[in-house]
Length: 550
Image (cartoon, rainbow, N blue to C red; front, top):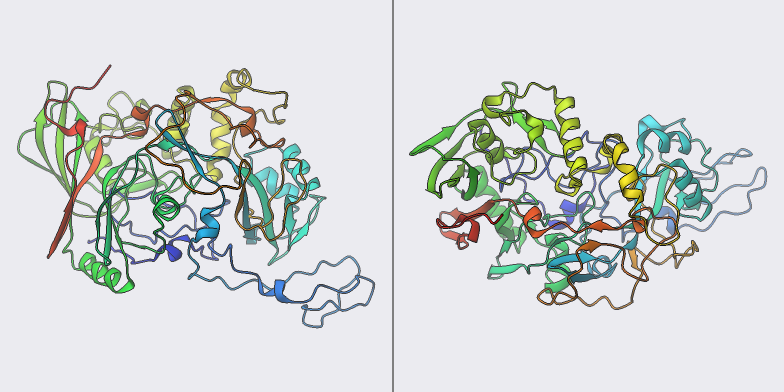
């Protein structure tokens, strides 16, 4: 079964489907997944909508007249509202043609510290329409059950400060009952994880295709906690290259050749090559142990265990796939292996290497001890899917390395349960005089709402014309040179002038991830078609005489 590819433009990749999708698969090892990878609503936590700059049709209508008994509300189709009845405007038609533009890029800016690219915290607006399962429930009930990133006390304070809106009206009482077509918006103080500070290297830009050498740790598209620290935003903000068409994708931790089409015509041609299986992808990786000589073929089916973090395992119920491996070198402890994925399953290379007993040397998921004493070799795990997911989260919690897992916010409840024993340690790292939230947790508030009005640090509502986000530190949105780090501080704390009094993330000082933690030894080396070939040099860790530093 060949891998199906959709030639979605960047604007399509950012558009959100009105329907709910139970989960959002992780990016494939350089291959398109079987489902459309446009950011979609995850069960209980939507991806960002790309309609940030589009106004609701109801916004163009006149404001309502007085709310007295028997008065008609303009824009309500002439329908009279009963006393106490809320007006709910009709849903807005989604516009999949909206792309990220300069207005989005100007939401905040980068700074560089200790070899890392960091994003200044900024106010951002999340939004969603009422889910079917929420109808008839109060906002309080929905927050309690589905949005545990913050305490109920936080949401109550945020509502009092006008950060939560329902159909464009501030909500002060979370006891309001949700109805069909209710539109929810919420302003949050957004923190993004740091990524490596290496610049994006352009390999080819000929007007038809753009090919870059993607550094490890940087996601391709906005997803989860990442927005500005993504390839799409970096290209737009620093190089002025928007509106690209995706051809394939790479995992966040995977480096190497990443190809975009510049025009719709080129995108369609490449899409046809994918369907006709005329595109070849070659990877190199470094695995633990001495890999066998000769060609090794793995054809074990792969099943997605959790779409939310892209966790997969070999399972008879999975989809068929095929990967060809060949050892290139061995340094006495680890091997460099050439990988040719002939199908495009999620994490295919990583899962097959784990199954063979040679996981990628620093794979934070498939090399984890949560898989058991043999780390999943031969498909032997001894845990249910739920137990495996919980064990992975607990392992990374104990190591304070949750940033290495792509955990979206609908899994935050599981993460919080795993972190209960870590709360006292985190409390010791609180800075300033601000008190922690009632839950004692440190997760940012990425909830299922998206509000187009930013909030100042004093809680006052800022200009309603503000779209997307507001940089709290400076009005200067010019990019910072990625080749000149500003400092070498080894802690990740909120920069001066960007703190928010309600934000729990602002109250913490986290150790910065090391560059070693942000790099996985898997690299997309070559992307080849009938009349083109794009490649990069071998990374340092793939050279024959390379030895891992202690």
